[in-house]
Length: 111
Length: 117
Image (cartoon, rainbow over the protein chains, first blue to last red):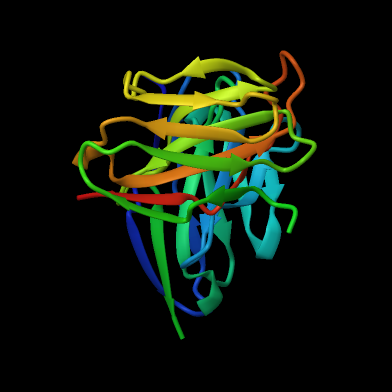
C-alpha cells in the first residue's frame, strides 16, 4: 500500500540549531511531494512542494527540502530554527489526486 | 478572507445523532476534498469532488457518511447515527486541478472538530 513515513515523531531543539526532518514514501511511480505545517491553533499551511525539475526545493520561512528519488525521500531542512517554528510538520505525497500524509513530526523550539 | 472556510468549527453531539458540516472552498477552485484527522495522525483522505462530481470515496467512508457538492461550489459532509469512533477533526481542502494533471496544490480550511459523547 502507498504510505508515507515520518520517523521523527517529536523533535526538541534550541533556537539557532539546524533541523532535518525525515520523510520517506513507498510508491514506485511518479509522485508530487509536499510539506505542510500546522502552527498551534492554526490550520494546515503549505510549506513547500516538489512537482518536477530541481530536486532542491525552497519554501517559505527559510525551509528547503531535497527530493532523492533513489531513496524515496523528501527530507525537510532549515539551517537555523526559531522559536516561531514550533509546530507540527506533515509530509505528503499524491500518487493520485488525493494526498497521503505521514503521521507528522512535532517540533518544539526553545529560546 | 478568501481562504477555505468550514462551519461549524466545533460540534458536540450524542451518539446516534446526525451531524452535517459545511465547507466553502476558495472561489475559483474546482476541486474539493474531505479529510479526517485523529489525534497523533496525519489527515486521511475521505472523498473528493471535481466540480459537482464525486470522483473518489475512501473505504474509510462508511455508509453512514455522505458528501455532496450540488452546484460545484460549497460542499456538505453528513454523518448519520454518529459513533464515538467518529470523533475527529474533519478537514476540507480545495484546489484548481486540470483533468489528467496532478499538479494542483490543496489549500486547507480550519477544520470542524467533532466530539461524539
